Image (cartoon, rainbow, N blue to C red; front, side):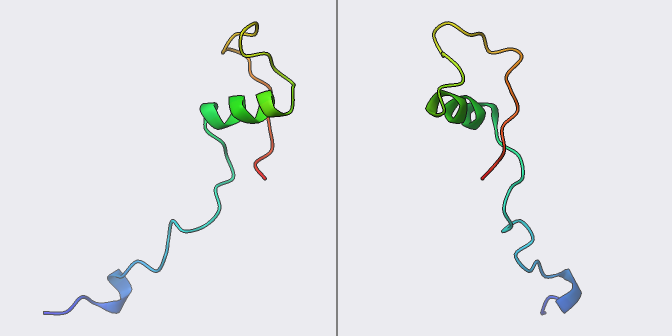
Length: 51
């Protein structure tokens, strides 16, 4: 028995993500020297652009 063509997934999640995880945001802010990981807390992080 074969699977109908309408039920097949055609790379649905292969696109680029438009949001960053918390760890990615902290790493990006630390790389841009906009946050000091030892001094600043984890709450109230700045927004960053996913590029």
